[in-house]
Length: 124
View 1: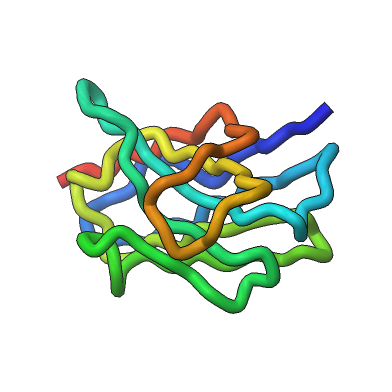
View 2: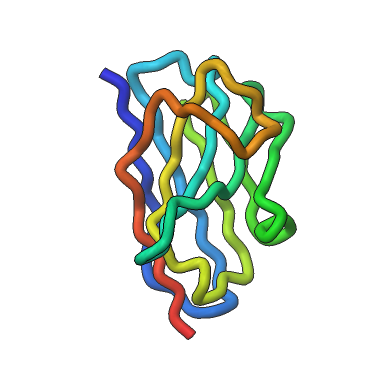
């Protein structure tokens, strides 16, 4: 049974940093492009970024470049999302997802698995 479990969310203030983790189990982690997406209240799910299978390459939504960084540790079956200089508009549920067949360098993915998400709230 495949599981993706996000953690690290919480309530922070504008300008703070936060690191989310997503622990994967039940799959060959290094075979998957891993991605992060987010969904704010009343809005559609939004692409955040992805990381290649070996972790050397990343791809981000243009609006988030420079503030968000994705990394992964294949030995720990974990992918991370480092978020800096957080803004109230970053408030959302953040999801990780796994894509077996896709490329890392695209916003379009047909993810095979999704986590349940972790809430990030940024107060002004």
